[in-house]
Structure formats: C-alpha cells, structure tokens
Image (tube, rainbow, N blue to C red; front, top):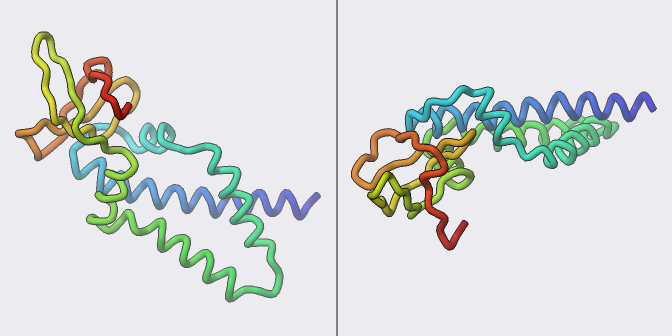
Length: 153
C-alpha cells in the first residue's frame, strides 16, 4: 500500500511540473503574444484535460518506481520535460497554441452585420478572443453568443 501511495505522490509531483511548464509556455508565447487578457489560473484550470491526469500520474509514478534503471528514468524525465519546454520557444508555443485553441474561418454577427473569415484564437468563460480579418496585432473580445455555428462545429 505504501508503494502505491508513493507512486501516486511522485507521479502527481512530476505530472504537475510537466503540465505547469507546458501551460506556462503557452501562456507566454500564445496567450500573451496575442494580448488575450486572461489570468494564468483561469487559463490553466479551464483547459485541463482531466482524464489525462490519471494516465500522467500513473505513468510518471510507475517510471519513478522502476528499480535499478536510474539512467533510463533520468532520460525519460529529461525528454518529457524538454517536450513540455517546447512551448517556451516562441514559434513552437505559437504553433502548439494554434493547434490546440485556434479555429479559422469563423463567422460572427454584430447587430445587423455579419463578419466572416474571423480567426478564433481562444474561447473561454463565455467570451471569444478573435482576430478580425483586417486587424492582426491583437485579439478582440466578444461574447461567444455572437459566434454563428459553422458546419465544422
């Protein structure tokens, strides 16, 4: 029983570090790069795939419990944290952020005007942060209810 608890605690420790490094890099190189005005805690909590936590904690904990393989364990942890740190490289962080959150060619209705070819950068807590076709410097905030349903949704 003690080994199982140890596995869970160390798995949780390493998985939390991995996820924090990953999302902190996305926050710096995707969210802040487009001037999306959200806090890290909101971004971190709202975008967790909680079912991945079970697999991640068990995987990191199981690797920690392997005996007599210090070199292999160190290599696993080093490679996994290097993968998480890719989001800290501006180009990779931007591309990973776009792959996870962005949707191209969205349409919005504002009063009696419809705007097409909008890039949805991030959607959370009832708001969409979008790039309009002629404005590429920073995201604009609109209620999610203004978005028109597309065939891809």
